[in-house]
Image (cartoon, rainbow, N blue to C red; front, side):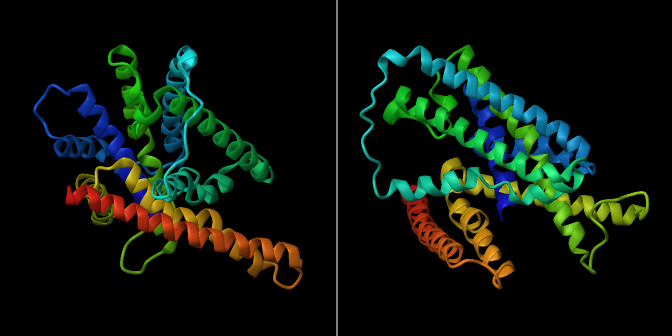
Length: 309
């Protein structure tokens, strides 16, 4: 669910880029989404993690440049900042909580990253530094954006930049980020299915030890292409970027970041876990379940309001 949703969100980023770049054309947003899906279709042929890592590196560079653009523009407007931001509504906070959790979910990628590292013993340290850097970057990025744009802050903050070269550049970089990032969740999902070794389908990733026939290759690439088509259909039906993040974050985000880690910690160390650690784990699980439930309900209400309108 998490990986499929990530593919949909990256697809929406690419569609937004085309929609903004050619805003004076008569093409609808749905059509731009379909065009984005066609452009991302060649990613189904990627079968090596090294090639995916190069694309991911380019996507990170593009995203960092967007952060720098927004933060830099916000700093130039620091004399207009208003620190009286007010308190978020009860309806808005659960939705925001789902978005926050979704943005920190990288768990499906971690096994593949750890097993491909030259020094797997440094994995924990890398995760600690990476999550810390991610949290600080998002905190500064969001805080400066809200101080600068206040109640007018858009779902994609780059949309708040003044029209012209700066906004076009930021949107282009976001579009590139979506194009370069799409292959990673797609390949990770394919890898999970491949390791499951389903009896009714051939291996999803061809290798030298187990070469596939032409028929088997046609089958696996067709299945991958069908998944891309599926993500296009979801993106067309639900083009609201932030609300889709909130819904999935309230389900898979809560489970992957709060519920499962604590439950597994208790189960794996049940014989010698301390009472304090046991209680803390259960409290985190309870917070996760309650916050996820509220987030899912309010996110679905917000989606229903859009369709009713």
